[in-house]
Length: 285
Ligand code: NAP
Image (tube, rainbow, N blue to C red; front, top):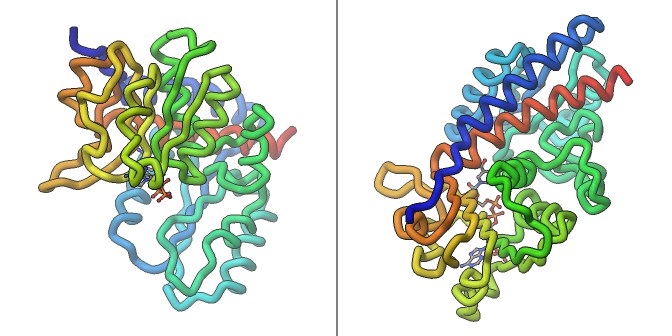
């Protein structure tokens, strides 16, 4: 039997409804929530994200302000500007659009964002809370993956998961969040691929998550029967967006599967909005 599709758009819609209710409560307390985005230079990819962030914020009633800088801006100027936003009570959350010009050190600029305004959840402090199993402003995509898995209603206790990809913002935090649910978790990376053992790991997975960025790296025939399959990958192939997993073949073996697009992406954006509201609440508490 074909897998049930996990509809990211519907899940994101539910999160947005909850956010709208929270915004009304905050407004009554006199708290306005707003997201400040910083863009350096003119990357066409990040322009797409910015448009979508603005639209999503406006749809739920979160203020959105874009601060644009020329690519010649210095590290010191950027750090000072982030410091200003940190001190501005009218700003709930700050997001630094990637990519940044080579001359800027992205990691240290991200570290300059106050942890209570780090709505992407990528700072050392917020990642640290993931390690402790108590994310406050959790990394958006990793939190989205957990939300999608939870939506299946499957009891995770003692299950076997395989996380393909060990990036700081997706693979590593997802692995930690799964461990926290008592899921036995293996993490695969480039060396697993090079050693040729990736299919062996994938075949064991009752829960499979892929965040690699290589179109159809994971073959449908590797999918364990009845698995929950979450595809984070975004790859452009012949003008179409596809994931890291062979969707059509995987769908015939999995019990639940996310599509690409329409799976992880919309939920990630909804979590960004949720984090902005959480950040606004941190400011008033
Ligand atoms: P990343 O930082 O490039 O990480 C990719 C990971 O895949 C690395 O850990 C890499 O290992 C591993 N890898 C590469 N080739 C492999 C192979 N043959 N076998 C096993 N592992 C392999 O990327 P990311 O930021 O995590 O993003 C991954 C994908 O998710 C991208 O397509 C990105 O666009 C997408 N994404 C989507 C969303 C969303 O909202 N839908 C959000 C974030 C990212 P090494 O580091 O050891 O090379």
